[in-house]
Length: 386
Ligand SMILES: Cc1cc2nc3c(=O)[nH]c(=O)nc-3n(C[C@H](O)[C@H](O)[C@H](O)COP(=O)(O)O)c2cc1C
Image 1: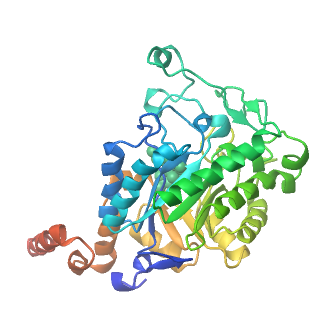
Image 2 (image 1 turned 180 degrees about the vertical axis):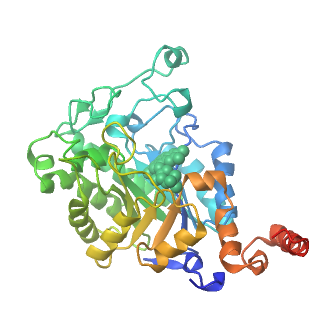
Image 3 (image 1 turned 45 degrees about the vertical axis):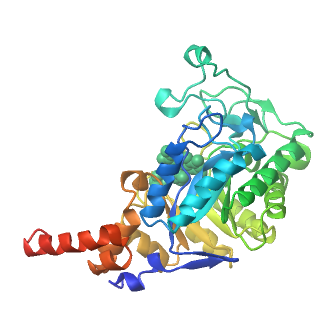
């Protein structure tokens, strides 16, 4: 690998449609379960701004729920009405002001709605929550039975529900555009509503939207069409997929993902955000060990077998050299970090120094920090500490 950051692929800009991402490092959507009635608070603003200041070229909001019923918890952020646009615009403007491309993810958690916040147990809502007004509701899914142990049985979607749900995604895309976001990601993974439609493990419907693969993919494509119709032509849309269900038998697999990715390309989707799993007991694929880089092969396969469709790799990417290797090997076009970013919000700036040396303090760090850190590094070198 080339040792200078000026030549590191991680720091090369990347253009999709009319949007140029300043580098290839993306902050993953991460629900914080801390919204108030769906609205972002100052906490979200400072939380996200940190990553823009830390050098992430693209910063995603957490998944914004397209309807109230699609919330995972009472703390989820929403985009189900125009009332959310001003507070979302404040987030987008702040991210842009700090040099990042503002990006929004939209989601409907489908059968996985209605839970406690993770640190409250992540179980079903109970008496404690009811006492503070957080009453349970019935999730909706393309099945009448829960596919996830410990989740309530959902209400099965009816024929009338489908256009309403598709429209909810389209309206959410429009609101994100009006709020000034430049990239949209549709959450079609992790056992949520969209994934439940295309996976044979989640979908018990018959007819137009259930049964064979083509029917199960229809909702995914309808959502893509609705979002494309409501999102500017010169801005890209990413689609997050669970590329494999990761069960012993009978689940969605990589061959299916390639077919779906080719269809999504025809429906105006610009990049596949490659994740996995979510239906069943575990949050990600059950038979795939969650080792460093465990989802990179999915991004690589889509990129290879769906020519012209870029991909993004995510999942236990922690080291700058690993991330650079993924790009140089042609396994993905972008790399996305979630938990590593929580651990180190300056990861991209540190990666620049790790790959390109102390000069990067003067080149890519904000001068308010870089001027000092360059001198600190020299002192440490002189003291034989580095
Ligand atoms: C706190 C937290 C919240 C998350 N919320 C979302 C979310 O809103 N939407 C989503 O698609 N994935 C969500 N994820 C999954 C991440 O985007 C990412 O795919 C996953 O954590 C694997 O990447 P990592 O190993 O870098 O953490 C969340 C992960 C974490 C840790």
